[in-house]
Length: 228
Ligand SMILES: Nc1ncnc2c1ncn2[C@@H]1O[C@H](COP(=O)(O)OP(=O)(O)OP(=O)(O)O)[C@@H](O)[C@H]1O
Ligand SMILES: O=P(O)(O)OC[C@H]1O[C@H](OP(=O)(O)OP(=O)(O)O)[C@H](O)[C@@H]1O
Image 1 (cartoon, helix red, strand yellow):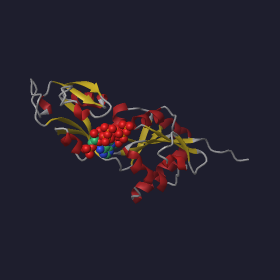
Image 2: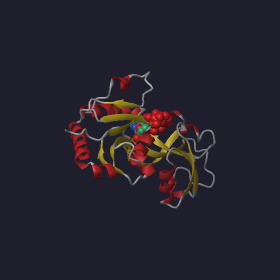
Image 3: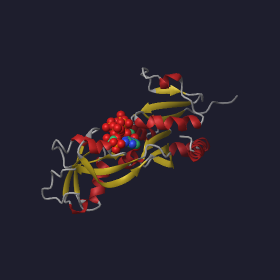
Image 4: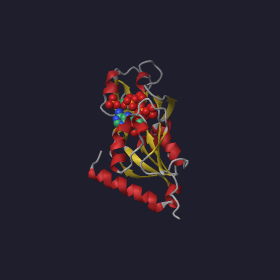
């Protein structure tokens, strides 16, 4: 009698990366059930053409958490998220080459907050208040140069914050730069280049090396072939 393999859960980010991610998932031979593409469906977990593989669809930040805690064994998320959490339980063996953008510091183009700081030159700042979804990365980035960053956590639309006097600067993702421009902001410096990674739970990799390394190799081949 053959035993069926343990369930394998893959956590995918809903939102903007999902569209770029699905061609890779499909090229790897994983096809979710029809409800996955039904915009009216409230389902969060989906069967696939592999009887033991399920896909869960969660927020990008939560992909890292589900995989770090072993609730999912594989996942896809940006290295912006990995940098913010620094989960030691996560292994990120493969850059998928999607979701490309950068994590940057931006401020008002008109320079409303000169105060005691030197506007536009981050190396001259002594203290800054920054609105961001990435308080850990932001604090570390500024602390490395002796600047104390007071971070105000926002979950979106931080481009509004400097104009309304909530903070002097923001740290956010920038791709085309059109969101900054439309809100009267300019990019001051880049903290990190961002793209999406395949992530794996380290404990699962130890317990199921053949299976998980097999999937890492499959995704590597898909990326090298440029299937996205
Ligand atoms: N403008 C962009 N261009 C390319 N990739 C981006 C861009 N903005 C975000 N990303 C990538 O997509 C991921 C998810 O983006 P974001 O945090 O904006 O969530 P979302 O798709 O709006 O969904 P939610 O806020 O509901 O989680 C980010 O962690 C980042 O890796
Ligand atoms: O430089 P751009 O091409 O304008 O892209 C940057 C925007 O993209 C992301 O937001 P997203 O569109 O994911 O919306 P969000 O505010 O819900 O995170 C990011 O937070 C910026 O607001």
